[in-house]
Image (cartoon, rainbow, N blue to C red; front, side, top):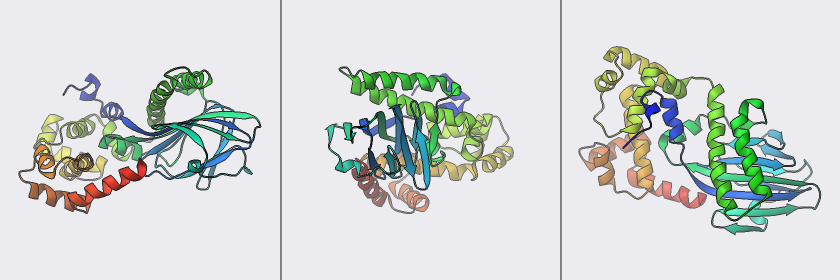
Length: 315
């Protein structure tokens, strides 16, 4: 497998590179005051909202944000939340409001006939374990307001706004792809100012970050502390101490846990336990199953059932 040249030394770049997502739901909303609706919780998904005209309120738990044109907000944990024109507007479930739905793209027209607002909203899921770990570091709410510091992101927002305003053939496909780019840009924008601590700090470390990238890239390799230390030109003892200090757990515990992240994904995709065990370097299906149960807390078959149940609820 060919990897981008920057990933040899930039584990943060590699983590961004695997921010590939699958769209669960996209919606272009044409709203008139008063309007409001409640979006359901979608565990495992990231909600995003882009205001392309007008204003609105976003309510997540006890937090209330006022959003204007060009504002972007992410709800990384997929919590249920409310969008409305003003505090007095009613907020029925979005599922109870008639809308035009085509596969996973919806057009919502809703409101009382007053001043207009338009938005693009969506819920996406990240497929790669590194991407999900990275998204898991985000705060409960990420607000990216209009700012000279977010110029490239604003360029993408302007393209989305143009597509919403002058929807042409293929416009829905363009909007969904631009929305995916926008989410990645927002996460990158957050990374530029986020504290480099914990796993993120480890990714940014030239040597430990490279070791993490090697494990993420090839989890089936017969890794040992000595092998990882040699790859990053450190002594075994110095590497082991620094890895534990930055990552928060010993190197081989991380390798095993990462393999189980990968295994959980493959179980959800329908691969057999025997094939997963072989591809992750285990000598037998039984050895893999014991390791999986120890790390994950349930058997591979139970994890497969749970993953499929979550996918059904989300999709």
